[in-house]
Length: 336
Image (spheres, rainbow, N blue to C red):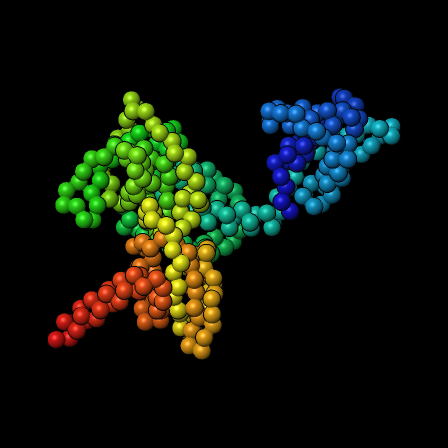
């Protein structure tokens, strides 16, 4: 059962009050204590009703959150714990809780190679030892793709810190097309993962650029430079693209046809959130997506080989045709 932050603050406050057996707690006393706690956490006055605290007491008494708190009323108006040693933070961990925690640990273990998680390693080890003390099967049952040869992961924590502390950085970078590395001064804005590679969205002289971490060789923080924060929202910035390449062009309506054998795969794993089914024909399904045409989209389309046909726009259709003709020539040259 999901519990919001304010509710947890109320439960913890009530719990702290009822642990104090040297004071008599009326309902109004609890309301006042909860209101003060919410004001301290939120920085503003929160109107806590009598009904809200009554429902909180009822929830704490119940098994819905696993509390089963022994809250009793005496002298018809005072509240206390019947067991003076009880606290909601001391409730025993169930077998189900242990199983859930163990699965969460195994999931986090899949990210062990990322430098951001290195500081957590000791914490995870202690938690894992504690949880696994009652678990016979320690075999991971969750597996995520990871590139063991991927370079640049050591820069994740550096870039993360630079974005968080709003520091300008100097990056030594060599793209696949460049013969030599170049040094650039950028304002880091966002880290982005795509297709098991990591990228940095940064601003250079008023222009947004995307840098692959595996093409970086050195990063230097420039503390004397004034940082410019563009307050990038990743969901908004990448909403019109497949992948990481964003241009100044407008999104376009892309129409493509997938054969019947592969259509279910595309339905369950859309090319893009904007994907819609336009028509179902005898030999396939026609889809629409609304995106910018970029390198990643072309690679995605080419990955479906002879099972896909781009219908619109004509320029993308022509581009795919040109690439496929080149591919055919490559195979023909090998045969000859």
